[in-house]
Structure formats: structure tokens, C-alpha cells
Length: 74
Image (cartoon, rainbow, N blue to C red; front, side, top):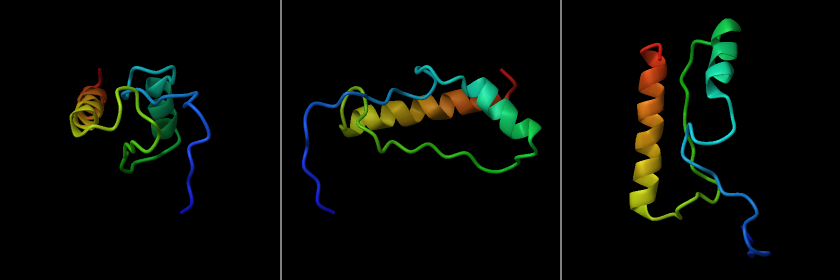
């Protein structure tokens, strides 16, 4: 792949649950629509805090925490 940075990132991804997306409504819609599959979290956008392993681990842990709460009905 040929890639060249064109300028500063205008958008940074944030850890799951910290952004403006209403994930409770999103997952409710999936469930109401009959979805009964697996959810995955990909960190492929420029991430707030950078790409260091510690930041990636923190963001992944946040996803697991949020999904655990959702599974428990929170």
C-alpha cells in the first residue's frame, strides 16, 4: 500500500463509550432486529493518545468493560 501523510489528523478515535455514538441505542437496534452475533472492536483509526501498546491496551480494556456492562444489562 502506498501511503503518505497529507497533514495533521482532523479526527481522532476515542476509547469505546467516550465518543458521541449512542452505543446503547445501536446495540438495542441490533438486538431488536434479531441480531445474535459477535461484536468486535477495531482500533484502525488514529487513536487519541497515540498507538503505543499501553494506550491500545487501555482502549481495549475500556471496550471489554463497556461490553461487560452491556451484557449485564447496565
